Image 1 (cartoon, helix red, strand yellow):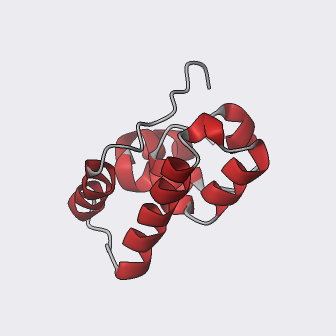
Image 2 (spheres, rainbow, N blue to C red):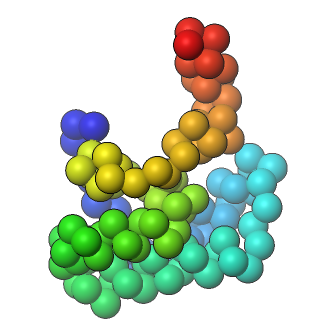
Length: 105
């Protein structure tokens, strides 16, 4: 995953943008989904940014907010250590690419 960029967690609109994307994809935006995203952002903000978290804390934060994390761009090292169920994210957000991939497999 070349060129992974740590998101700007200071942006209070990040969770709102996530909710809008979920709604446009026809997915539920229940309280637990939104709270997991907010908690993720709060952890990162308290650490002074993504790079302020140790690798273990990055992995823990991502594991506790899998859906939100799969929407964000994180490093290949973190992605390689977690089961983010990226196929589900692809099916929801990139249905044409997902269908092509499934057909190719």
